[in-house]
Amino acid sequence: MSEEMRGFDVQAYEELVTENSPVTEENLFIVLGKVQDIFGGVPREIVRDLAVRTGLAEARIYGALTSYRDFKVQAEGRD
Image (cartoon, rainbow, N blue to C red; front, side, top):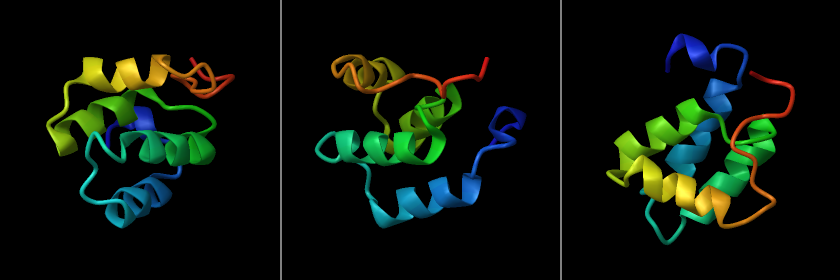
């Protein structure tokens, strides 16, 4: 993970991805919900990482995020 991920619980994220592998379109919403539970939102760096890991386009992941108003693209209070 990059510098952008400092301050986030990267280990919890890695465990989440491992427990839900393979991350696919079918379980993407579940994974995003769990990511939001950990981080308080879905950081852009996570979207990029999930795109690389899954082969899904970042636009597809953002589409999933924006299709439900309860998802937040970034944790509140973070720039």
